[in-house]
Amino acid sequence: MKPTKKSNLYDTIIIGSGLAGCTAAIYAARKRMNFLLLTDTFGGQFLESGNIYNYPGINKISGFDFSALMEKQLEYNTIKPLIGVPVTKLQKHGKNFQVITDKKKFTARSLIITTGARARELTIPGEQKYKNKGLTYCAICDGPLFKNKDVTVIGGGNSALEAADFLLNIAKSITILNLNPVFNAHEYLLEQISGHKKVKIINNAKTLEILGNTFVSGIKYKQKNQVKILKTQGIFVEIGRIPNTNFLKGFLKLDQHQHIIIDQTTQTSVPGVFAAGDCSSVHEYQYIIAAGQGCTALIKAARYLAQKK
Image (cartoon, rainbow, N blue to C red; front, top):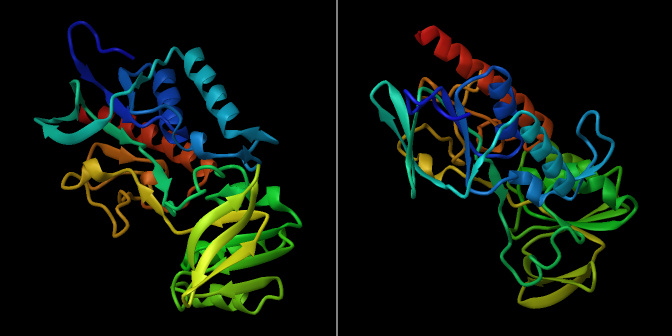
């Protein structure tokens, strides 16, 4: 994956090493492309996941084990990611692109951005302590772990109600803590959730602290100037996600949530620049989607390069 001695120009640079980035790198290696896999920290969303039950071909795997499995596959394909090199800026460089980091500049004929997104956190006491110990940020990923348990969803938008809807056939009961007086969500979701016998809604509830011993046991929240304790066996924080795209402002078109706008081919607003995974405007945070987009992005980048010759 190093450029030839005659040239410091890569065919493509893949920025980010979650599942989308690793998938793109594997396909680039199989195509014998001259490429670089560049990342700040290895693993992306792997590092945030608990057990994963919904990846085709794998019955059950932890995020940590999935990350280790991916590392082995990269090694098998002789791919050595350049780790610890956060990208600060992208820019055009003649007909090519320049990737600027704190340490070095890299040049490529095309780019694939797979920097992912991170869950928006509550930033309250107990949150870090109970991550993956009853507190999670993905109902679809981790919901089945809470079968027949009393759970709480924190949030007041579509993602919160979608999480509650997904949990209806899993959890024993669902309490929704909404910071605002009303939900800001699709009407059909409100109709499905608000009158359901399993669901209790608490509006105007500001979450103050996550409580527990070894695992989550409750939530301290404030409502109408009164501090209350809600007992719960599981917490789903669904207050949105933040794409890792700050370094792209002014270079690519982003949507209102700062995700990279892509078309069905993963092409961005700049020809030759592709994006895949959680940082893209697809807004569906699933491993299988990230893998598919990573594959698509590399194939489309290779086709773009072939057409330029």
